[in-house]
Length: 244
Image 1: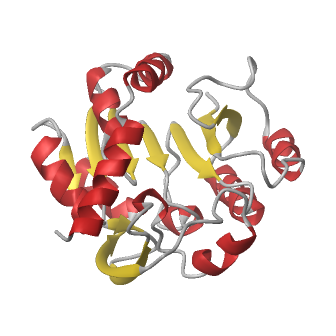
Image 2: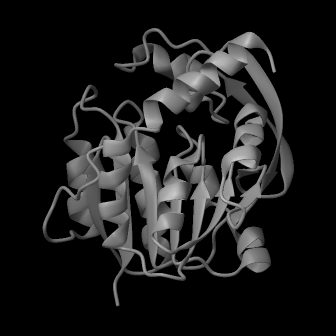
């Protein structure tokens, strides 16, 4: 591992292994997960979400295609967390990932992201200065292999719709990262989720680890909220819950 890659991994560890943040995240997951639930962590990065979900009693399958982070996860994840060193997308394939060595958390399989990010607040100093050839599989294939998850967390820097295109089954709970600078991606993602079943939606802003609304909202309200979001509002996660 080169020095620049190692520094990027260390930077992510220092940022995300925040005890206060992990406690808040555990409180959030304790409210939506049950012991024994199968969960997919798509875009595991340094594995903080996977570790918290495991502490909540979930059975975790973590997906991470970046070689440096996959190596870190192999060495540090609890042994009962299943690590799949692959990206998720429409089908089985090889893909080229644009990698930021200094800010590896924003590495992405979205080929247009380095260009689009020039106009996105918060990305002014990010450079995608490397690439990685990674394996890709699909959610449907992983469901066939590991079982039906109760929750799928997707955080893949603008590649969310491609991940969802590989899913043909309704899942009880799905979360996708939203980037205000890419509103069309989030709108398409929630529309794709809504085609799988009748879902209601909520939002977690940034790393607050708490829901924005006390009552979950329908697709139209979620679409309106996204449409009104300012480009500099900051990222977060949209949660979609299958209505019983």
